[in-house]
Length: 85
Image (cartoon, rainbow, N blue to C red; front, side, top):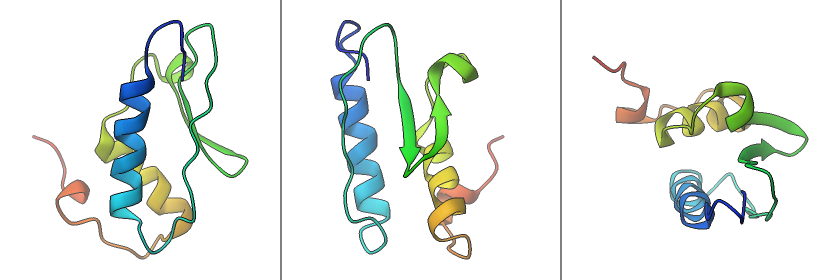
């Protein structure tokens, strides 16, 4: 997350969403300060979200789905798996 842009709260909120949803599967979530508008989410070496590439911030639902697809593909996320209208 970019410290110049003050995105710590957004990063921390998404981190707690992931830790709550994947409390059995995730061993840790790390927040790494950066500069220049960076906002990326990785699972190991896999980049699952880049604000630069996507052109926007992710919704929690999108992040949860992408993380799930990597670490627990058989898992149902309940309401987060429902299609938006």
